[in-house]
Image 1 (cartoon, rainbow, N blue to C red):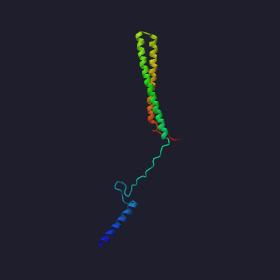
Image 2 (image 1 turned 90 degrees about the vertical axis):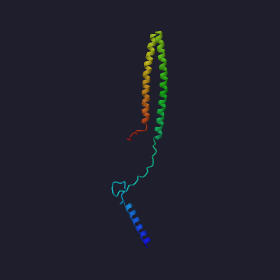
Image 3 (image 1 turned 120 degrees about the vertical axis):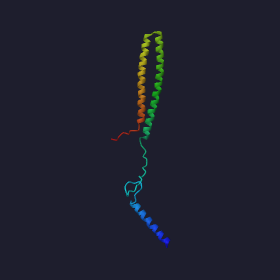
Image 4 (image 1 turned 30 degrees about the vertical axis):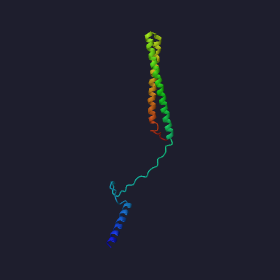
Length: 138
């Protein structure tokens, strides 16, 4: 008889706890509001960005441009070295027209190289920014 009473008591208490929990009457220990039952948000499926492939192709194209620009810059540096050598030779000989011509070519080439370096810098920042800031739809 004792076992029957204890069993019935356990069933009544368990059913009361489940009813109270389902009604939201039992507060979660981490919750700040009494009677609040915390629910987890449903997992959201990842949506594939349709522009992802286009963005990837654009980034690769910009990187290829940067590589080509760096190659051109190295060729310009080699040409600048040659021009400076020619300038020294002209100064040693004392040929004023060659000196003036070589100095002008050096100035033009250095200005061109400064522009190329700036373009490379701009392309690098552009490559980093591609895909980070999507355009707002109108």
